[in-house]
Figure 1: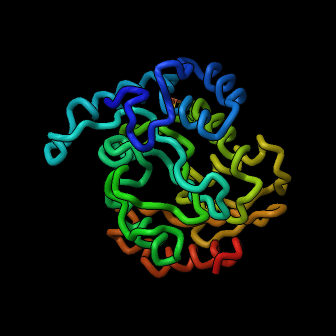
Figure 2: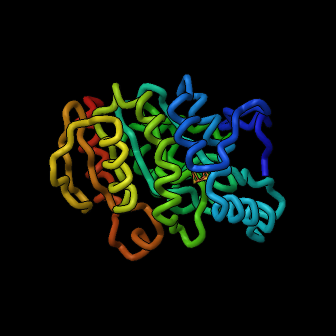
Figure 3: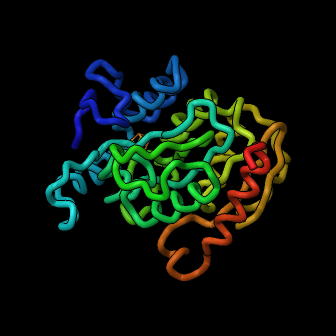
Length: 260
Ligand code: SF4
């Protein structure tokens, strides 16, 4: 595990960053974070979900054989990219040997390969791959974040873990939402979590919001939420999500954001 204040490119924490150890701590520390960087810093040292803390650190210790020589991040993974984004991409949670290893969301795994290739084709990323936090990749007018910041076993956070983590995303959205015109949500879990966070921020929402689906759009004042199948191998290997489908969603997002 990489300790806070390590100088790692995605590390916004220091030895004095307050550490949340309960869901109530998350509520308080997220609501009181005085800047976007502080939201990232505080969330990156969070220990509020015992099961996820144990899992992320165990994975970082045991490692996958092919990454045996690497030091895993082993901490919560935070939002990353533009601080005044026009497009926001929201996933689910870091992958055990992807973001939990590299410290950057959608970096160093197959899902990230798909996502960054599409972002690059859409003109939203400077490189078609995202391999390490040191790879020089930059997001253009775009930010990527996630509703659950620790890698969960079997990629399945519990409802209480989802709820415990929500204040971090709410706090992040409070800072970035004013410039966002399109939110691309990858998967049903992220869809539900995103709408909950938007409600908490007071964004006017229809009484009956549409259920998640690929290509579903929810138009809200000043921004549109777009549903997209998750870039997981389950979807990309089976052809449920194709490059064309992903490109269509990002074309729509760049149109809405005035970036086309
Ligand atoms: S999932 Fe979120 S709330 Fe839970 S320990 Fe990780 S960062 Fe904290």
